[in-house]
Image (tube, rainbow, N blue to C red; front, top):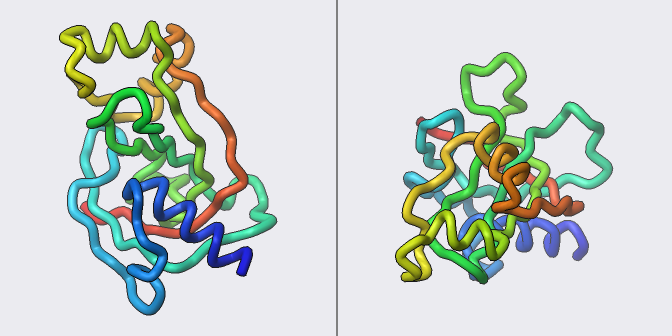
Length: 147
């Protein structure tokens, strides 16, 4: 039950409010959902989660909390072709826009980001600028990136 709950949380993190039954018996392909190194990737969502994953066996997936601004897709720290890409095995970090970040990323105040961060270095840089807070989770799961 815990494994299924962690998987549901991870998939919901990427897709917003996703029903766990949508992934019960099949993989789901999603187009243009995750940024990595300036490129947008699709993925195949699977019902695979991990517990007690050793460091170095997963890459970070920055998933943006949509309670402040919408329109920013998740950002992966690695992509297919990278020597350190772990095949789509992710450790999830939740990213939230600060008040300063909302002003910088949504200057027209319409609730949508005016530009998307498209690589992990930019996510880390915007955290340093005070635009974002990044929180660790204990969620790890698999969903490979598809160019």
